Amino acid sequence: MDSKNTKKGVVPKKSGFVKKFLYAMDYLLHLELETAWSKLRDQNAKLDIVTKSMKEGVILFDKRIEVIFINHAAKKMLRLSEDAGLETVKNRIAEVFKGVDIDKCFGGASVTTPFIIPEIDAGNDIYQLVFSKVDECDGDKCKAFGSIWLEDITESKNLERQKSEFVSVVAHQLRTPLSGLKWTLHMLINGDFGEMANDQKVFVMKSYENNERMISLVNDMLAADRIESGRVKFEQLKINLRDLVENVLFEVMPNAERRKVQVRFDNLSTDNFTVVVDATKIRAVIQNLLENSIKYTMEGGVVAIRIEKLNGEFLVIIKDSGIGIPEKQKPQIFSRFFRASNAIKVETSGTGLGLYMVKKIIEMHKGRVWFESEENKGTTFYFTLPAYKETKTI
Ligand code: ADP
Image (cartoon, rainbow, N blue to C red; front, top):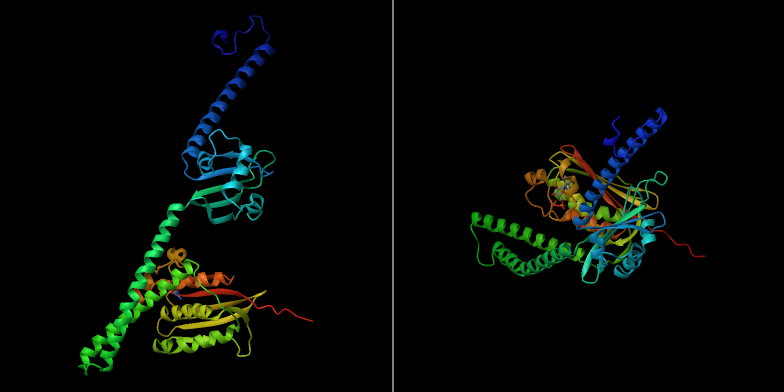
């Protein structure tokens, strides 16, 4: 070995085998360390670029819920200077996001499900905070215990608000002329302005039906807007869910018969499912789900509704043998104005607002709603409502 070309200096001329061996080992170790350092520096530099260029804020915590890392964006959101120490971050979070208890929020998160604060005001801005826990640490290898992901949603919330205001103004403006038109068409059909020829009557009737559809769309838009903005009042009433279902069935039956769809109610008339709900709103939910099932089921098909008792709640199941929901479109089904491609083909009328409202109303009653569906086989919608608990007095 030519010692002059080595990094670690000169090998003594008369070194023995062991010394040469140790020297070689030292040299190799040094080389390996140097490569590892260089890789680490490289990775660090990349991580630095990523965290600095991110517009979302990230804060990492250790097991004692102490801050071990904060990126550039999070510092900006918390109005901290670039050289602020990590020990100042927790206090700053409490100051900016008033009422947020970091320990409690991490307590509500698990490795698989984060704890989310969907909307929180911080001065003039609106943020979303996501508290996530990281996977189990392998000894001391992984120091992070959890993270907070901060996202500035001011712009999207303002846009949403503007959109909602726009919808509300348009819907209100449309309501009056549409009602006026309804009565004029009604009078024409009634012959109040003289008898019309049969073919004239057919056209006027068509206009009347289209006008009715517009009115129902405008009403749905206004109802959705009221729910969205939280301007909706709830009138709680103690009722038997079975009575409500029977009541709705009575109303939708003529339409089902016209479409040659069989509708079945699978509960006994003595069954009692007491709930405390806003009866008008829950009635609208059942009506919407039943009308959809009838609407999206072909001639000769079957729709069945049943209520089951679960632990502390009731489960309502509405099953049909209809067109089903395409797999790819399932995630959008509860979104505002969404209609699946196969539904548009078989039924042109529809607003895509019904299921959106169903979900909102059920969640406001502390229930859940979901569905199972296979295209061309059928769909089953499920929703739950808390059962009424009798409080015994002695
Ligand atoms: P609309 O029925 O007015 O279109 P909804 O909000 O009630 O609006 O429903 C949204 C969409 O969900 C429908 O357009 C349809 O694509 C789908 N859908 C709802 N219920 C069913 C059902 N029972 N079978 C098949 N598709 C359904």
